Length: 424
Image 1 (cartoon, rainbow, N blue to C red):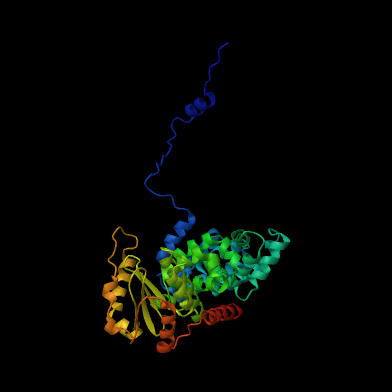
Image 2 (image 1 turned 120 degrees about the vertical axis):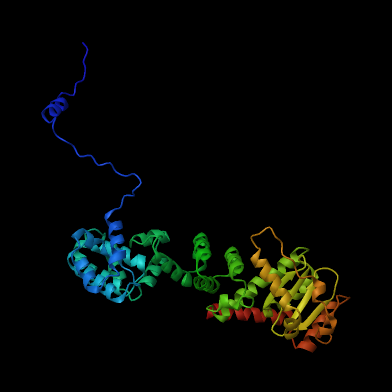
């Protein structure tokens, strides 16, 4: 037997309603769909410029659904009278609407307003705590209570997430805070000020990510935290990244002006030690000249390598010493004379290196002969590497410059400085 489908009921309906006209509206596919929040934001762009009376009428006549969305419109940069009215409406709404708590928290994390909006978040929690706690475990309820009673909410979240047995971000998510909110960055920056070395090692990817996109002030804060809390040779890759961006305090003083004196000197000393080691390491780190100059690293302020990595310029507080990798004498200039006659060439070279660091263009380097002038050296400051030169250098540095040249004493000075740094 053969069966054939017939839409009987549809045919009957069409027969009985043949005179009915159906209004068709064809959507314009070129018009983007806008949800209620997007429409509210667009309206707000206009009404926030209204006189306060007109804005009040607009705010007071919003639907319940729209009022629940109001915290998403808040910004600390709004005009004072508009901001005040918006907060007033939100505050009144928070007294009766439990659901507003979640929206308020998101707005707090988005605006980082730990003043006015923070007060309303706390008010909402206090008024609806019993009902809100039904959605939390006992542990979560206690966490939220402690958080909302903390004097410094950012630091509180930083400490809790740092101490948690959970993953750093996982702990913050229990407070509804995820890494797409601006407040997350503030919390992370705070953690970097007190975290121990293990945290920097475990979260080095996170550190690199935020350091590269941070403002200079944030980078300084991150750098200071790393220097304070880590042995730099254990976080070498992070230290090198800091050096690539900030150089040293002597070379880029404005990039270090918010870092403590001890921290920036310790970092400079560490990076300069590596620079010197790398310079002589092209031949051999047992090179006699490396073995000689490394004892003075504790007093170094800056190092520049130039002339196809054959010339090393070492800056001390009183003099500038130019050493060579191959054949050639050491030139010792007073700092003032070197700055007057040669530093401009060095500055221009460093500026070009920075300008073209991501380019195929290789900037011209200052060549050693451009920095050689026996008549400008400190009297007697033209030193040659002839037999027993180390003792001759020691004697001259001690007798003419008053330097400490005993290696044991210099190492002791470095050890004491590092001990004082970590004990402080």
